[in-house]
Length: 222
Image 1: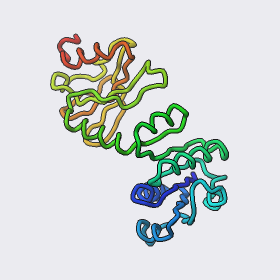
Image 2: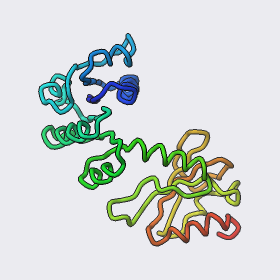
Image 3: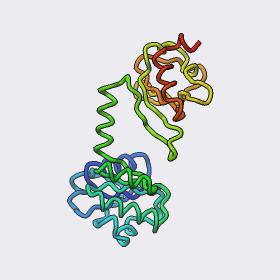
């Protein structure tokens, strides 16, 4: 598909190169022509447009009318949000995401239906996950807060046991596992291994019950 990336700094250029490498058609917009030379390789196969992501003429030069996705990845929160809103509201692009430095703003815009990536919040979250691997971290929650997905390193008491046994009726279940950096869905016979990272769907009222089940281990679940 065709993707427009606004911002050719370290984040935008890395995203654009990954998309290009995956076979997508990519156009990058940046106000500084030198950014293309600085961050994109000589064999860059996409399109480079000098301009601003909130300028409709520049967006159309980048093929926004044919785009199925747009990422606003400049270093300015206001520019990224304005670009994301134009992409969503004017051009009806189905997949839009904005990079936001201020996590407080990110929460507000998420509630308005603009998906965001808050860099400070993301970095902090990643550090906490590595400092406290035995703690459950919320990866995703639905808009009502009724269901969430938590990430948790496999407790020792579940190593060598079928992960499907960890689930409990409609309260919680293991949806996927990341093993040696590779994610896979959990089938009825998948056995847990040391170092597995679990991705568990859990209802709001069952978070404490899930924690008790994780701590108790497989023997208590019999």
